[in-house]
Image (cartoon, rainbow, N blue to C red):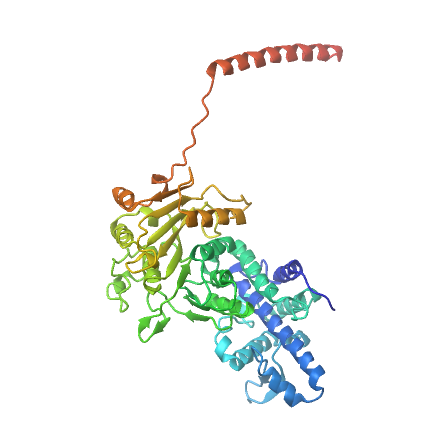
Length: 518
């Protein structure tokens, strides 16, 4: 089959493949099987495409073809199926989607898929080590007993074998597969509900954060709570070229694997994504010091309980020197980490937070005051409610700018812009959404730093201090709409007129009924 495949066709075909597991496997789990299969199909199609190209060039010179293929982004090795008792190799075949498709009726089909994934990992350790370790296609617990499991996996392979999912580079442009991956994650998030918080930030929210920190060529960009990596992808896109370096940390193993695959599918193979607990044991460390970044963005878990407050007092990186957040609310723990890893006098930080972060007192209030006194806070943006599948509450974005520090380019800027964007959204059946026009309005307002009636206010340090460092947006942005004055006399006259009309209508109705003999 020839001709380019449209983005919508790939999306629809990939989503249709989910029917194999829908209703049988929890949405938060079956996403892993679908996304791994999408990944396997993609690398198999790319490999075949390159093989055919070299075959035309070099004919039957298999050795030369093999050397050429080994210089590609990844290698598809031979997989071996061994007898579990004797260790004898029963079968050798190329570790790709098509070899599995040919064996889709095998009684040990789930095991064969695992063997192929293990072989691919082993052959591509630098880029893919550990990516498939948390997914088991031979799991009775997730996929059912052998007969049912084999049937489901067979249908899955057949769904991915459709022409609309031919992902050869000659048929699909570079961004399509990455976009499909993000599309599927969005659909899975909708199905998974609150569990989606582990792996998903709405695409438009990610786009907004990326634009607020405006990364540029040469920047090192980090997301210390990266989920499946969508926010890193958006930040990279905002750069507008390939001159950037991506870093991330994620505590959930299966979500970390999704992020690694996401980077690969977007051609960002060199991204360093670490599987670790950011607050307890950050892995992005150089010479026993936290790595520093030009841009730090995140949508961390809201008000995380038991985040490690006891250990934070003795943090070896001294991240919590402004104060240790409450043990039941880790919001300021993530904020403190993000600011400490942003480059001094230069780095920019944008973080999604619940509104309580703006006004809660105690330890949080003291940390907030210190951040403002240190002249780090640049913007506070209130977003609409019900944007996230995980919660219906409205959230806010805090933007910190270390160029406001003494010696930085913006050290003379002492004000903070507060924006109430809570009324700008597109209503949806399950969730509200930001549109491009809403994002542009927020970003342009942040850049202009001018008051806009009932939308934005540029607050001086003294004004914030007089409000006891409370950042609750309604204290600064008055969105009250005066009700239209009611003319009582006019309303009474209208009621009298309507009553007279009603008497006339009833009289006519009575005449009609009399004619009808009712």
